[in-house]
Image 1 (cartoon, protein in one colour):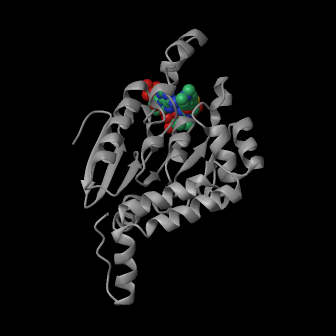
Image 2 (spheres, rainbow, N blue to C red):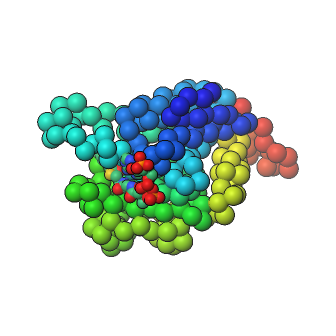
Image 3 (tube, rainbow, N blue to C red):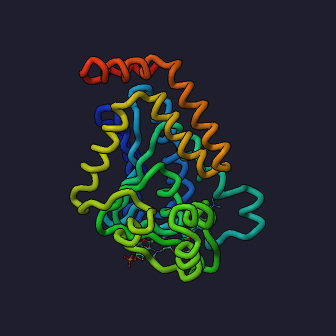
Amino acid sequence: MHDSLVITRIEGRVGIIQLNRPSHLNALNDALMDALGAALIEMEKNDDIGCIVLTGSSKAFAAGADISAMQKLSYHDVTKDDLISRNWETMLQVRKPVIAAVAGYALGGGCEVAMMCDFIIAADNAKFGQPEIKIGTIPGAGGSQRLPRAVSKSKAMDMVLTGRIMDAVEAERAGLVSRIVPLDKLNDEALEAATVIAGMSLPIAIAAKEAVNRAYETTLREGVLFERRTFHATFATQDRKEGMTAFVEKREPHFTHQ
Ligand code: DAK
């Protein structure tokens, strides 16, 4: 499947979405966010996909929301049409695991989209930042909320108030990314991680994702209760039975996603 703003393909049980607006370093305009949302929904519905990888080019994951498109807008425009919010959070409807494979710039909205994914694998040339303050605004797609949860208040304040860029090493040290790989290995590493996840039971992977995400939304006591009940619920699945039986029988499990 191929269209101008996103390129999608399927490898095994992994769906890969590549942002494709190279002339603008994948700056995220309305049409690109619509295309990304449509690709995500299609992959979410596809029973043959167990994990999704979102990536960009070797120079830019995405250099932010499209500043030229936003530059003309008034307060009235953005509130009346809920213009940007309308199609920016489709990612949050996706229950399957999503890995961001980030090379080059992930700035502003690009960093925010990467943070909406479940984890980030970074190439050694990745650069993260929330530089909106330099153009007279603030993060608008969750950067001021997700960045402090990922890297602590102090570093998030530093990033959001100075607009400075963080390299891959600093991002990994701060906990924003899960691993760093050489640029030429990024796609392989992301595909390999996604293939591992897609080889698990899909309902269990979804339950695991929901449980971890709960940690960001609730108290420890409530989160642990949610985890406990979800853990109990896994015992209603065939895949839980198959997984434990396979271990006892010293063989690989054969999950049927039920
Ligand atoms: N928007 C539009 N065009 C962009 C762009 C952007 N964010 N970033 C780069 N481009 C374009 C450049 O204008 C240039 O186009 P031409 O001049 O060739 O036509 C082309 O991409 C190549 O860029 P450069 O020539 O600048 O390339 P360099 O390697 O010299 O520099 C750079 C790379 C990433 C350092 C630089 O391009 C840059 O500083 N870009 C802007 C980065 C930035 O400030 N990003 C944050 C944008 S604000 C919301 C959701 C999200 C947001 C807000 C609300 N809601 C849901 C409500 C998010 C806001 C933002 O992201």
